[in-house]
Length: 432
View (spheres, rainbow, N blue to C red):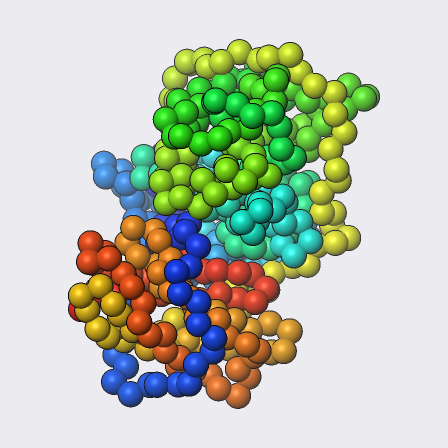
């Protein structure tokens, strides 16, 4: 297993799971008295240096990079280098040349947040939770945990944009991953159950894929069974192969990668009880720890987990193909930037004056919201903005009378792009 020195990027992630308590319409600017806060973002440049886990080094190993983090955070597999330029595979599977970004030299594990983009949202819960969003939240948390443990991890997508299945698989092959794990949340509803209905699909021709799936299954079942939820579960749930009528592995995310792979369905987003649980602040860190534990055990031991149950024959729907894929702009930020925040108030009730910019602003794409996320992961306030701000960059807006518990000491203010959704970084401030 390659250790952390090969991965020279550390992003600050903030998981915001709860629905907003306050949602205000676009209000009048109140810039007076604004002061700059400390940013939690890390610049993504070719000179960036890793934040290593304790006990590891940041020495860059010999050899060419296997991946590149574009200046806007998009992950790209490297197919070649020439001088100061990188030949890469774009999210839609096209060749491109990049001259800036953060190189990644070694990868142990590829974490794949299932679905993504305006067409391939995945399932949607009764509470409005989109599968593509919760998949990304869990995947980011797994990725961060693995980095902290010295396991070189990388994501196939870092925001809400489409990536065809064949590109995800090619990405894993090009970076030389030792394992690939695709994160999902299931639909439609199954039968009521007292225990979680986790299903993990593995490669029929690879016993190591089954071992990977079994270890993730055991850890995830143990972690989620501790919660009081009205679960759904299929009668044959477990670790299994799923074949199409031709006898091939039905899911491309299992069939195509060269590395041992597992497609993990962590629960039923179509079940209202589970969909609500997926917004609980405890869910993402709990399940991410379980998945990371399973992956780390797979990489560092010969231990086995649950054996395969009897497999299924099934033909899944076709995912987003290359013909439907719209490339994210690799040289342009995916998200608006929060540059200044002034918190006012105290004793559990606060107001915020926020300055935000989106240089790409146009009628087709603009900054359409910002939110206040507590250090407990809860979204306490959200400001929505109607329409673009083409002639007002940056612009300042306020949000007032937000109740925040006195136990919350810091918050992060994040921006939302009308196309790519919420940024996972922002400005962190200490509450007065």
